[in-house]
Length: 428
Figure (cartoon, rainbow, N blue to C red):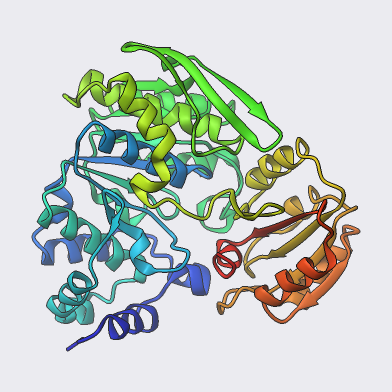
């Protein structure tokens, strides 16, 4: 019997295989466990209207934006996302409020026998916990972010109103496929029969595959860029304002998500809600509701970690793959600073060559290992970086690396904390 929240955390972290901590060994290449655990709980995944989100980058931002938009329309919205930064309960929220500790304890106790028999992974049990919670709390909608891939992801047992795929680029090639087409095929697995799908980025390596899959499923496919025409104004730190004509009038606002890469995510989330309103009896948002969601998404959904300024000259961004780093460096290129200091760390199973090739050689580096078993040793990371003429020192922890950067950096310098989400989590 689990009695306290701490005991519950110890149970799910220590008893259950967790991808974020141990890597591919925790990845289950079938839905058997999820289906069995859902059945043991009365199939909660079928009780709620869901929006399903997949893609290489932007899933978290798009999920939070869709949730904020639906909340601003007056709906009670569940949000399941991953991974978390500081608190496991970040993964499961209703209108921005974390799942209660007591509910987590109660769910685990009710499922101890099923867990013993089924032996689910950390992600599998987290997902079924979320669907149970959303059913019991009678949410109007649940926004569900995939964990890894799509076709074989635990979340793919839902029957969504709408599927959303943000973009396709290189990540987890060892599990999802060694070509972009294969990775796209895995993400396309969330497209269901007679279910609308919104694609966030039109790309040559995935466009025809998505169109073909939608046709096969008798589903209508939309490309976000065709559903809304938005204009963004920028300053050196990113998006300053957005404007555009919507069915309800001319929208002008100052988005809370300011990184330049959020333009695509904003278009995608808005397109998703437009399709919901057009085809699925969702309320059409009024101008003030669009504005409120865009400007207040962080408070509405408890959104943290992405493009997060710790101080005037300290930026955190968990850009952990090739596409993410590319967009981050494009953002940095527009900023004014004297010298760049980069605190970074990655996981062992990450292919670092395409990332290291992009990092600026003139920056000063502070290499650190995230405090998880899967973290890459700082010394090893430093040695790999040297092969790309990236120089700096290795530190025994992320906080020590950041402390060293603060000591070294001048007021007009910029400190960037990046790489694995677990590196960023340690400094938030």
